[in-house]
Length: 433
DNA sequence: CCTTCCCGCCATTAC
DNA sequence: GTAATGGCGGGAAGG
Image 1 (cartoon, rainbow, N blue to C red):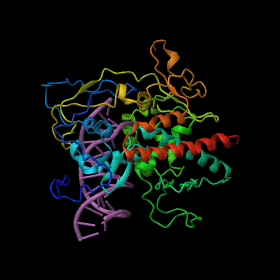
Image 2 (spheres, protein in one colour):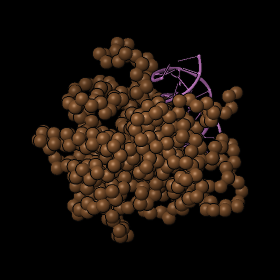
Image 3 (spheres, helix red, strand yellow):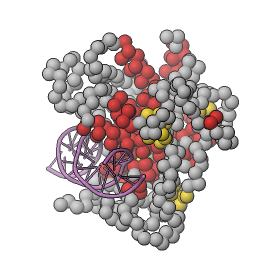
Image 4 (cartoon, helix red, strand yellow):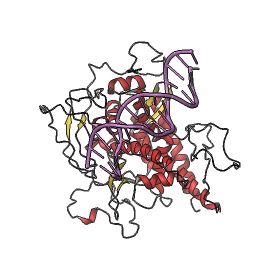
């Protein structure tokens, strides 16, 4: 029963509350210039290769059976970004997104949750989000790193013999009376029974909600930001994010979620799928950058412009993912891939926005742990390394400000900038341990 | 077989 | 109460 659910096309359902701001209700579908859609991309850098050899246009062949690839969160994310990442967009409605992308509401929640956790979106109200875009990522990453480091030291200071759940209930702080992040609490889930006597922790029952995808995403990212290794397999990540309380079934679920997250982050080009150096196990590598630094600010480096795979792109049709069930037949557009090329990388975007910032010295890549091989020198084939870096974020921040003529956004960014400066100076001043 | 992970039921939470 | 959110895991596609 309840075959179709969703997309209640009728019922108004308080769609767009009268936002005081200039909430532009998105241009008309018709006028809307369809963003470029990435088609068939072969699994990211990893080179999962192959993929479906479907023709671009035309594809007169068999109406292929249903393909999961077309329904992946990664693709959906790509399309989502393509749809909203433009200057004139600042408000995102869930219903609208679901409709335009042709997916169930549930999926939009997935996307939105992870995007929000990396600073690309901010929840405004029920059914309503504010689009921040890639510009919000740096700040979010920095904060995550900060928090992560703090947590680490906090944990290190403790001398707990038992492998209890090292739970750090962090929370917002900041002297500023500004609640920028409210739902940021780290909590490791725990099975059902166990530990008859609960320590001083265990907040009033239900907070289980904070086991969310968003939080998981943040913790996952934190892993990359602090870890010394350059790649992690999802199993490993799951294990690490899950204390040690190896709960088998519990971990399976965790891994499932990590797959979801990894796909999204992958489509944003924040991570990339690879092989673990030694074992041949699949793992992920961080592409963004925000490693620890000694006082002198953070550096961002861009890996050699992502192998610009000759991905096919298609425009014209709107990026609506046709709604088809598992066992349905899909027709044309065999779209797959991620945000490719030019616009794909956060940092490229930043670069573009800044219109400059060409430094020579930067920190690229992790310092190979031990015997860990890095790409790069391995093959002299690397010809064009377009690594650029942004020396200081302050500069970047100020460059960003005038960027937005929109009052609301400007405000928002101003606030971010201030936050950066705040902790930044605090950091440099108080760095010496 | 094992890995990847989409779908959507249904518990929670918001209104 | 209804609607909005979002865990969670079955089980199918992909390799």
